[in-house]
View 1 (spheres, rainbow, N blue to C red):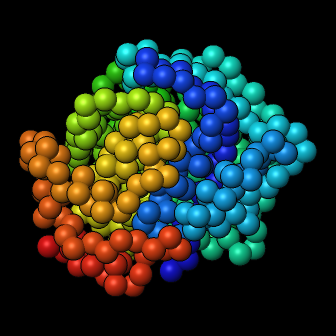
View 2: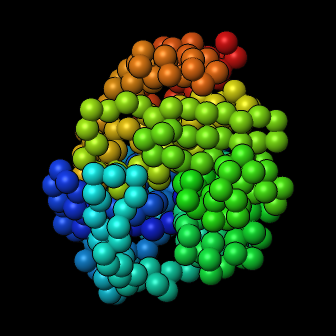
View 3: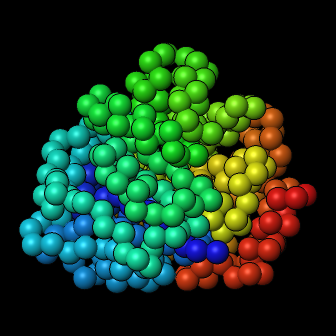
Length: 337
């Protein structure tokens, strides 16, 4: 099986929350996604950075086994985002955005990356998302993200993208803006009618809703005593979700439900520290332990799906270059239980 390909942004973030601040730290949708996914499978990253992008960031991404053949370095500065959060941590308030080299980013897929097993399109311009789709062989699964800026300004191009994707992953405000309705159930019907087979709505501390043509699935957020920085939590969720599916090669409904839980677990680690600091030191045993946590299991029962401890047992620690055949086989075996 080929690798998981992600196309999106790599950035330097400056973030302030009630619990502290961080300046010019590693960020970007593709960064969070690929780091989370690397705990499950091999990842190819396609993005652009400037001359100011520190070697230590490159070394970190490589240490996670992420293939940076598609990471382009150009003259100029790296994309920068500055934002702050109040105690209402579900929404970021953007203070400044400097696109820099990202403004003229035109994805050029290396020949070695043109037949991925799965593809994730970060929240870049829908026209660029379409261009990526034209450059790759149709993978087993295509997932994408978007944001209100593109929903408002390039809606028609976005609908063309959604005609070709399997999964759309957005937050509740973006879902309502795209679906044109306050009811997420009605939003789900509207969006699914335009192409995607699955709609996943991220709701921050309230968990996740997944809609498809057969059912609606709800999963809770992992209960935390304190969240320090929610930046990148949604992208980390997507990385855990798609990374798990890529690792198993299984796209059944049961696998999707299990992938949602893994995505929620990965996001819960991200918010515990600024930037990717928590993911830098994360061990797979911690992922497995949180996946089996009784708090998550109890809430899962209330939402009508199987306990995580029943869904996944005896996982091996993934290899940085991708899961072993044994590990992948165990994941598939546990899905059939």
